Image 1 (tube, rainbow, N blue to C red):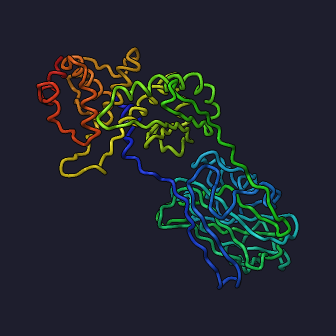
Image 2 (image 1 turned 90 degrees about the vertical axis):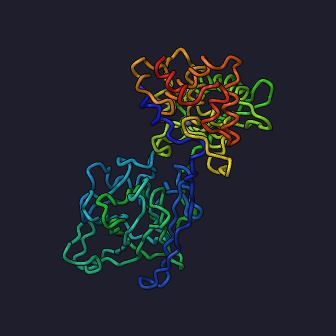
Image 3 (image 1 turned 120 degrees about the horizontal axis):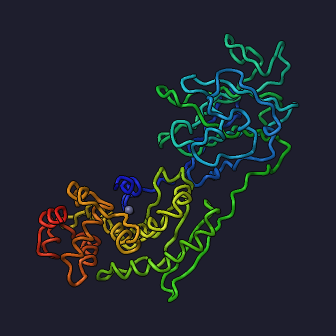
Length: 462
Ligand SMILES: [Zn+2]
């Protein structure tokens, strides 16, 4: 009965490491191909809206949107939506969305995609976008172009026995956005020419190569290929929705809260009517429960819904004064676990444990079962005791370990408080010791007159 909770919050607040990065990968001049062709590549995980430092977001009025596309070599993956993804001017909803991407079949070794722009066009840049959490994010391809004047030229068929060059295609650039930083995230590549023009062509060919040698799945999730005409000065770009958030304060003005619902606009009403009252009531209560000398709890707390894919399966986590909420999970759990999970995370904000950073001669990191047991105790036994979410049957108790974390440890803490805490100070003292890096298992003897082992065996046999 406890298995869900340990998968719910596997990271405590202090263990979370920021994964946001935005990097310029490379600026490669490709002198062997054409003297002035230049390839820019960038990688970003800033948001779902393809925010790079230099390369702009996908265009919504480029020539690729009216182009005809064909797979001229290789086989697309059955889960891929195929070439319509490349010219629809839309970006995927999540980082792993096969039905919004064009990619080749696992183990197929790649293939070629061709575009017919419908007429000869002077092209200033070709920009390619991709997004995936792992080896399907980077791009590795060779770009060709053709006027169609070559004898016997057929744009939508490629003879496998001869090179594209032998079939009327001109090699324009080699693109490789791979980096040592890790593959996942959003990638963009931009092929330009210092003269301002890549040339005047009607047909384009993208020869896609796998991004890893020993990974049959390493085929790029291509979501958009833009052909920007030289005559267009300012292509229209996809627009990221404006941030939607609302702010409110505790009645005494001591605490300020912001809830950012941009990634879950469908939860805006629920957040206002159901979640906000829980925050208003419980954040100050948690602060009052967990004081320690010289400590001031964060007075500004931000709650931010995040796209599910960005949360890597985690429902919620706290980092400093910011609580991230998995939009998909919150939607599913809004009438069940969602509010309680927020209470749990607010406890992490108030705990403000420094974790391993504070470890020194006498500063041990607080064990995980205390870090997670206290939030689950406050959640299950003080906030929502009626749910009985951390109650254990006699049989479960006899097999339980008090330091199993989350609900089991919450149950243990509840029992110790009910049976060995006549002055009602144990929780405060336990938290203060953990926050100050002085927690050790001897604290149970100090607080209750019994050792941790004695308490644990009494708890099991109650
Ligand atoms: Zn937690």
